[in-house]
Image (cartoon, rainbow, N blue to C red; front, side):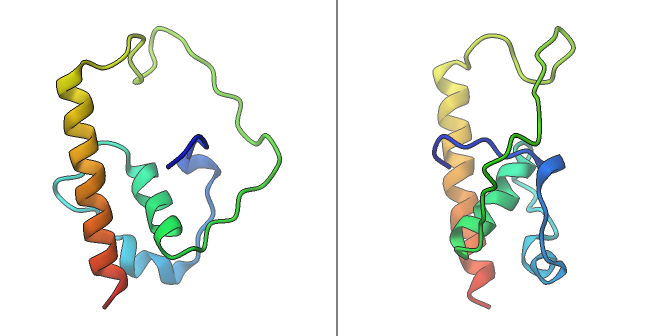
Length: 94
């Protein structure tokens, strides 16, 4: 969350975190990298490195759309984000 991007290919995590992160919930149909990052934020275990480890390249074959999302898609994503936070908080309390 915030203005830092989260790329799964540049993440490292402890094996113990997998018990809480996996399996991905059925409602999560996008942003699996964000799911992992949310876990780190909720448990206050995220460490950001001040190095550029990924150079993102935009091209016509990217999965990321070229145009901004519409209001309905934004609302759906925000609802999924909120649901993800609730689910991860539940998982970290066990």
